Image (tube, rainbow, N blue to C red; front, top):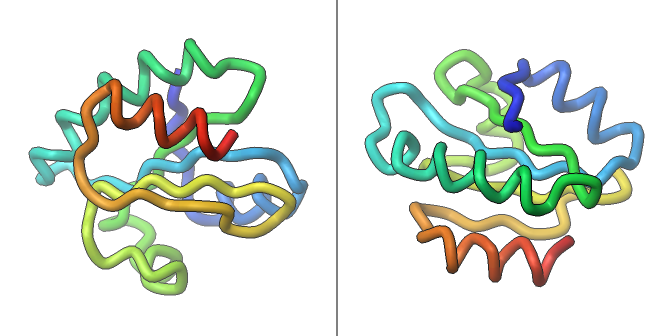
Length: 104
């Protein structure tokens, strides 16, 4: 399950050093809405390997800007308190599975 969290909650989670997959999205973004079900499916498939969350860029603009999120959807993988990888734009389930397999 992908849990929606605030930017502050993401910061706190990343600071623990946990492996986190974060989908930066917005309600008005059609590709984001298309990616949502893909991320839900993959969060179950990769359960135990990472915590899956999403952050609304409209509500957390400062965090998004500080990370360089200027186009959405933008999926970030954090590990050890730092950005390990990210993928901009909609990816199919197969493409996102490959991205996560390479980075988790």
